[in-house]
Length: 261
Ligand SMILES: C[S@@+](CC[C@H](N)C(=O)[O-])C[C@H]1O[C@@H](n2cnc3c(N)ncnc32)[C@H](O)[C@@H]1O
Image 1 (cartoon, rainbow, N blue to C red):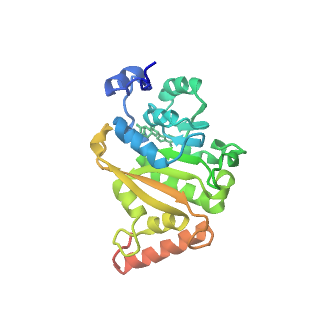
Image 2 (spheres, protein in one colour):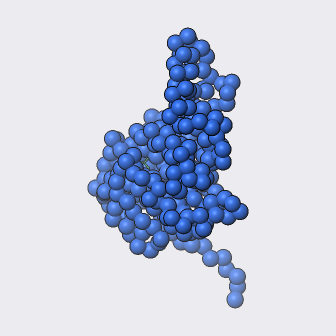
Image 3 (cartoon, helix red, strand yellow):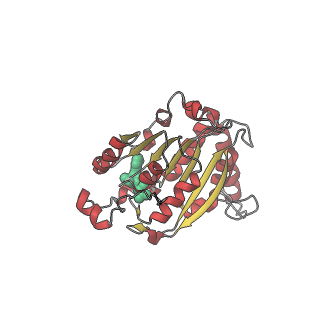
C-alpha cells in the first residue's frame, strides 16, 4: 500500500457572509467583535502558546470559533471557552459535542478563572512545567483590565495560578502590546510595562494588521506571550506595587519627565 499522506480535512473557515447567515450576525461594537479570518494568522497565534497537546486550555472570547478550532486541532486534554455573546452558543456547542470542550456563556470580567482548570491540573506538568494555557483574541474594551486582574491572580498564586505558571497568549492593541514589553530606557515604558514585567516574562510575538479582521478595527493588533515568573522582580503585594508605580509615573508626568504614561 502506498504511504499516502493523510491530510485532515477541515471545513473552511466561515466567510463573513456565512457568519451573517448563520447568526443573522451583526458584529457588536460594544463587545469589540473583530473576527480574525486569516487561517495562517490563527494558527500562528496558537503556535505561540507552545505545547498544547494533552494540556489544559482556556480560551476567552471564542466568537465563531476560528481560534477554538485551531486549539482543538492540537488535541488538548480539555478546553474551556468563555463567550459573552450567546449567539455563538450553537456553533460552539456543536464543537463541544465532539471534543473535550466546555462552553461557558458569560462575562469573563466577573468570572473566576480558577474554575477553568481542574483540581488535578498539576498532573499535566511536564518537566516541572505545567501544560496550562490561557489564549484569547481579547475584546479591546476589556483587555487591559483583564491582564491586570490575571497578573494579580498570578501574584497571589491563586488556585490554578498558585504555581504561577499559567502561560498566556493574548492580543492587545499594538501600542498597548509595545508598552507591555517596553524596556527600561524607552519612552514607551509605563506602569503597564512594570506591572507585566514584574510577574511575567513578556514577549511581543508578532503584529496582526487591522485589515486581517472583519470588521476592520482602527488599529493593528499585537500578540503577546506571557510566562509567569517563578519569583517576581519586586516581591511585594500586587496592590502595593501598583500604588508605588502609579505614584512614580504621576510624579514623572507632573514634572514632564520622558517616558511618563
Ligand atoms: C476580538 S473578538 C474575537 C473573536 C474570535 N476569537 C476571533 O478571533 O475571531 C472578541 C470576542 O470576545 C467576546 N467578548 C467581548 N466581551 C466579552 C466579555 N466581557 N466576556 C466574554 N467574552 C467577551 C466577543 O463577543 C467576541 O466574540
